[in-house]
Image 1 (cartoon, one colour):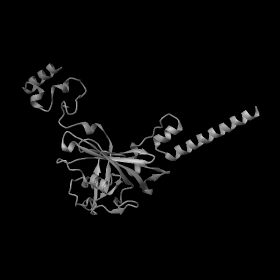
Image 2 (image 1 turned 180 degrees about the vertical axis):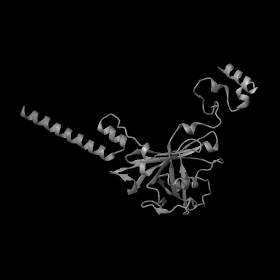
Image 3 (image 1 turned 120 degrees about the vertical axis):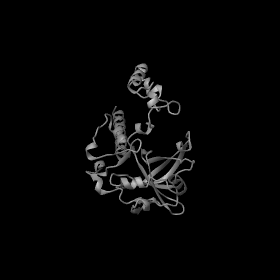
Image 4 (image 1 turned 45 degrees about the vertical axis):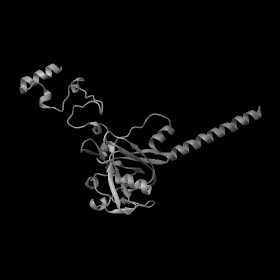
Length: 280
């Protein structure tokens, strides 16, 4: 295959091989027809741009608000964000260090003050999300830079994005640092417990958060984003018993109700067994 490819390029472009025209290509790209294979940090992927983040998509955006010990509000989006569990709810965000190995303000503020907020990033707020992503000094208030109205959190000392329809108030739990091959490859994973949730009535339909109304944006690869619109939402119910389904849904109340019913049924069964034993 390689010989045929080289011959084609030689005849067509008067060049001995494709690598002369496209120097980013390497021979290993052609070893698995129809598939790029590489070992990160060891071998080249043979592509002009790194594909890794484009493979892990879409990623929820952690649009995080913190406040410095001196009272300066900070707002920044992170594409490594997710929930971890639901009873009680925990979330995490990962913030890569900058090129000099300095940690992000969001990490420092969360650790120092013990709290942080999360604001859902939506299609309508996309320009403000992008504006708040600029790497600025700790003295800069990104709410003001992005022209965003603030709303003070109810339980913690941070500002929230008033126009964001879903927001969390979080208490800091811990930080896990993963070392990188370069300063900017090192990341700090911050975990926090969600202690308060704000949901606008405007995005609730039939008692459920209507993701089609929220229209959250998510990070993809490179500089690309995606948005969830109403026609992109579908439902599938996983086969299994009700308790497992409740866990998958994150319904702590239903799990408790099912456990109470099981305990009641077991107690009733025990009484029946005792009653039969006494009659015999």
